[in-house]
Each structure stands twice: as structure tokens, then as C-alpha cells.
Image (cartoon, helix red, strand yellow):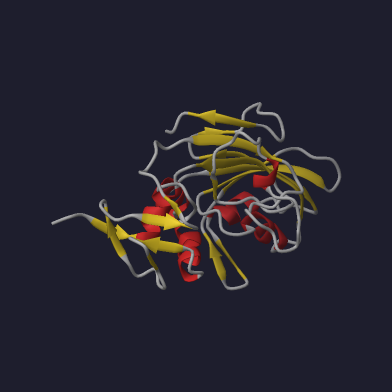
Length: 230
């Protein structure tokens, strides 16, 4: 029996985009299989099928490549922003191949952002089941409870959303300004900002230092570096 897989998975594996974005392309009528435009992502394809996105045939899955990018504040992690704000992908060097991000950093966050040409690899890196730790350095304003690390080590529910336990180290600060080092596994949307807000603490700066085995190190802000896929 010939191996078949869902069309969105094949497109993501070819490095065109993420699986979710591939489904959007299909629903927009921009994907065809063997000359027929698809109307639904509920389609299985095999190695012999000819798949085209916007009229261009996708290639066989290339070798997985990974880049570290030191994202500065003021860029959104999206290919196109409806508000017209500058994007991470618009700031990349012109000789970069087509890449997607592993997770996101919001507009006001900075630090390590992983980029890859492999949508399936990106998805695996993002899944909570991967148990990959993300470490951040966080500057905060406000009074920090002495037992903050112990409270967050138990996990916390904020506005009906449960956040898994995380590691917190409190650095010395001056007045109401302090630095924290926080290590998470889930990395939910705006997790650190929402956790801190639940204690009445404001996040002034958020820098991602590492993602799984990958570290920001001394990579200059705004620069990109290809590394070995681990």
C-alpha cells in the first residue's frame, strides 16, 4: 500500500509554510493536486501526486535547516501584518531562503527566535509534549512577593487559563525595578506578562535567552545565524 499523508502536512514538510497556513491556502483556492484546485484540506496525497501552490510545484522535502535570529523590539512575528507594522520576515537578509518561525515573540518582546525551512520540525518544537524549556530574562516593575518562585513552581490559573509550573530566579534590583530569570515549558501566548500581571507586577522588558537546546549567546540584535539542527 502506497504511503499517503494529509496535504497540509506535505506542504508544511516542504517548507512552504506551517500546516495551519497551508490549510488557509487550500481554502483560498491556491493549492492544486494533479491539476485540480482543492476546496478542502481533507485530502490525502502520495509521492506520485503533483502538488502546486500558487501555480508553483512544491519540491521534495529539503534537509531541515535552522537559524537563530536576535529579534529586536518593534517587529511582529508574522509574514504579513494587517496593521502594516514591520515584520520579522521583512527584516531578514535578502539572501535568506523562505523560512517560518518556531513559535512567536510579540511586538514588545526581544531575543531568540528560531527560524526553519521545515514546517513539520517547527510544529514538533512548539508542541507542549516536546517539553522544551524556554528561558527568559525579565525586567519588572512592582513589589515582588518573597514567595513568588514557590507560587509559580506550583502552576497558576489566571482568568480561567491554567499555566504550568515554571522556574523563577529573582535577581537583585533597585527600588521597584528588578530582573527575573524565568524558565517555561508551555510558552502560551503572553504567558509571562499575564502571570506577572496577576501579582500586580508590570513587565518592562522581556528577552528570550534560549529555546530547547538553542541559545541566543552573543548574537547581535537584528542578526541571523544558521546553526546545526539538533
